[in-house]
Amino acid sequence: MADVSDFDVLILGAGSGGYACALRAAQLGLRVGLVEKGNLGGTCLHVGCIPTKALLHAAEVADSARESEQFGVRASLEGIDMAGVNAYKDGVVQRLFKGLTGLMKSRGITFIEGTGRLTGPCEVSVDGTPYAADHVVLASGSYPRSLPGLDIDGERVITSEEALRLDRVPASVVVLGGGVIGCEFASVWRSFGAEVTIVEALPRLVPLEDEASSKALERAFRKRGIGFRTGTPFQSVKTTDDGVAVTVEGGEVLEAELLLVAVGRGPATDGLGYDEQGVAMDRGFVLADERCRTNLENVWAVGDIVPGLQLAHRGFQQGIFVAEEIAGLSPTPLDEAGIPRVTYSHPEVASVGLTEAEAGETYGADAIESLTLDLGGNGKSQILKTQGFVKLVRRKDGPVVGVHLVGDRVGELVGEAQLIYNWEGYPEDVASLVHAHPTQNEALGEAHLALAGKPLHSHS
Image (cartoon, rainbow, N blue to C red):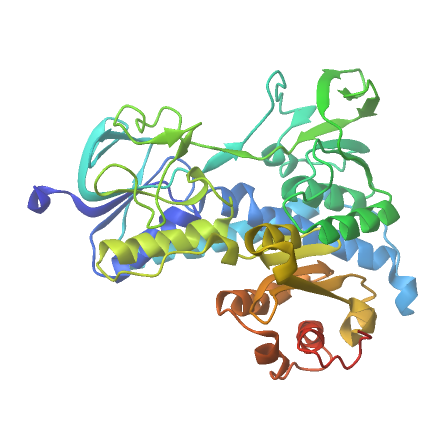
């Protein structure tokens, strides 16, 4: 059968997971087909990470202008030109899209435009045309989720996708969901001058992060005038003449021009034939083992459709993994805890590994220790006028099992943090490395020095 198939690998979905798999498989000499109904690059490039971070950079520029006096620079913020902001954001996306399209062509990957469905164990039909392959990789991605009874109208009640297309700065917004997406948009709109209130059902903002990180972000948001209600489930919303009236548990009504629904993302698997072909699933997610294998032979799954962190770089890495696995290279499976996580709000929150609570549950509370180093003593952080910390969690006499960072630009530090975690670094190992001065990276070095029992700038 193999010699009559159209492709060695046929990938359903051209987001981060799908296109990474396609590029690596082609590099390894496999015949690759890539099916996509939308744009190459998927959510991350077009309506996710890239455009959102462009908005966040524009927000940082607005804050810099507004707060320039503290640096002895007399600048003033005349306003936000949303058409200009969007032109900048779309320009970034288009350049990356063009680069990616060129890369696909140069690698000899067959791009099949249209809606693909799994129609056999190793067959995908694209708008009725069947293609056979030795291996099929499911990489259909995710969509912005809503809550039961909460209808998205795209005008007053919107998701992140409509939020990225707004041609104005709303006067006021209620953000439903205090996770990464909710906090990032709240941060942008506040920098642009909007009144913002976050509503989160769980007890704290960014609830998947270490509790200390949540507290630091809440403190910073409070200072910036971003309102939030934690431990407050949503009840209902109705549109009014001026916008929306949102009722939360306890009866409080919050009025605003817009309601952003940011309650997470669901797996985009509906109607794609996975069920009919017998792919094992759970509430729309495709179940795959640590080697990204589904229960069907030669059918693989990567990215947001697989339970776990819904992050572009996770899908990307899984895509590369599957290509190498199919090519017989036996790569090492991904450690989910070793995937870095960043919330690009002002201030940023970044982490890798286990929270202190998770480490306590895993190893026992008596078997771990933690150390928090305030960024107050870090020269570069003082220059940037940012506050925050580096928090380390380790096994006693063992490696560092969690790194948690809060402060402007700390997302850039998570690269070293993930090496420390993934290489099972001991505090002594990192303490002997030289960190350039003045950088925020030094704070990582200092924290490890302190944890190794030789604090220099910190009292412990």
